[in-house]
Length: 422
Ligand code: IMP
Image 1 (cartoon, protein in one colour):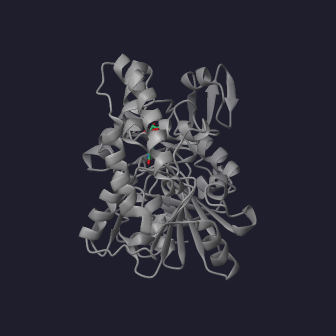
Image 2 (tube, protein in one colour):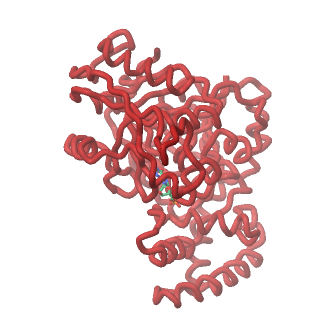
Image 3 (tube, helix red, strand yellow):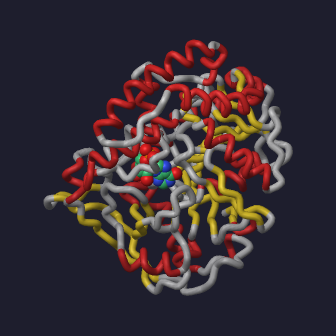
């Protein structure tokens, strides 16, 4: 069975852990969109690994890992990540990691342009990770990007970099920011790509062969549905399709190759960056930060925290075609006496059961809550779904009913053994 794993909220749902859990039965683990703006923390055998571009299957000896054409790759960042993970004792050989020759690269100047644009937006900034993701995807769509395959023609790459540097410098100079020289960018980028080349190939036939021969494929989504460029809280979104369809366009595998869509959400809601967050709650944020939870894996930023929002989840389950829900971080709510669940938004006297498209409506959305009793019991040692307190199971049942998809996995802690199958 081939499976897409997608985030149903604003990223950081704990997808890495669910991917890691499902990887056991997978042969191939695939990333299809995003870049090193993603940060997956996986704890295996008591060791903590932080992954940004590498698929989570890299931590297993026998899995093939593919970075698909829909991903934007910062070659310098990826080389550093490979070195770091290898330093933790994980071998990353060319047959274990394959990178699409159609993937676009993030240039150093994309990061500066990202920062410059954010600075120019001032209080209206998106709150990006400043990894150059937006500018790299913009170049792709603008048809002036660089793909890994282009490095077969170094002259073309040098010319294109010179062109991109000249254009970027104009913008950077206007903001009094450090400009680039084409030589320095070329030196840095060519050296990093050289290191990656043994991994670079046409991944389309590799994936099709795996599919046709009955191997199990796992598509590892990055970010979440509300950060999707089409379905998210635009413009406070990332620049890729984070939803299930992105797994096809980002890899070259067709929709009929997929049988299962696992949607991952937290038992509450979090978000980093700017933009609407109707159920955001300072009390819950302070409480979870006090427990040392909810600090970003990529940037270390504290995440805003809020109550479970089933308006968002309802749409997320629809657009992704979620067949199974994975609810993570249930243990974060262990000691709360009373839990709120948002079932709709009141906006100008009208009840909304789905998120609005108009951005000004978001600012006036008042969540409609129902409350449920907490379980006030430590769930971290629960070894099976049946071990969970009855109130916790009732909370999960209500979540599933409101979202329209069944709960199949529950996370009660960061370790592999703390993922319970229902
Ligand atoms: P960008 O992807 O760096 O352009 O950032 C755009 C928005 O997506 C910002 O709100 C970021 O905080 C958010 N974002 C990007 N990647 C992640 C992620 O992996 N987890 C959570 N938020 C993310």
